[in-house]
Structures are given as C-alpha cells and as structure tokens.
Length: 124
Image (cartoon, helix red, strand yellow):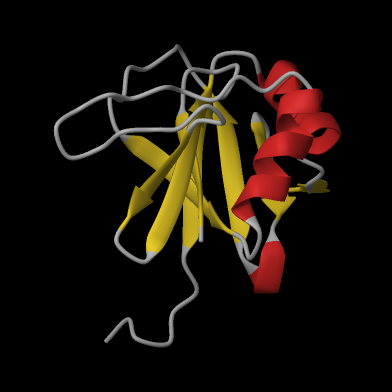
C-alpha cells in the first residue's frame, strides 16, 4: 500500500527562523517554500525532504530524524567545527567514542540535538 510512497520527516520548531538558519547554514540543506504559512521545507539527499513547522516546544526523548551518510567520521568532524555538539552515551548496549560515534554491529551512529530540541542522528 505505501511501498512506493515518498516519506517526509516532519519536525516542530519553536523558532522557525532559528531552525531555518541551522538547517541551511550549519547542516547545508536547501530551504524551499512549502506553500504553507509557518512551515519550511528542506531538500535532503535522493529526493527526501524535511518539513519543519512552527509550534510550541515539544519534548521527544528519541531520535526524530536520521541522515544516512557514507563517511560518518568526516561528517561528524565537519559539523563539530561548525559548532554542533554531539551527544555522549555510556549505556550498557550503547557507548559513544570521543567523537560521539557509537558502533552498533555493522552500523555507526552519532546524535546531536538541534536548536529546537529535536534529536537528530547521522548514521552509516
């Protein structure tokens, strides 16, 4: 039924202009007019999109958005130089290294919190 449907991540932002600046200037995404007041659409890789809308701050204690990349270490390093602070985890089944990267079987992931409080993951 939804096998061929396009999926778009939808995130809240307390301050839409702050979110726009972060997602364009820090993460390097291209903003597009969403056609809906109080919303901004960002283009990501391979035709995927992220829709961010303005509303009061919410509290999600889980990953709300994930970017999949080929070279996680270089992306983490580049974002760190732009001021992104990666989370450090030290749980029984999840530990991050000095860069904030966790090895989970064949996958690696790193997490940061965007200015709006959304937990974002970058993974391989």
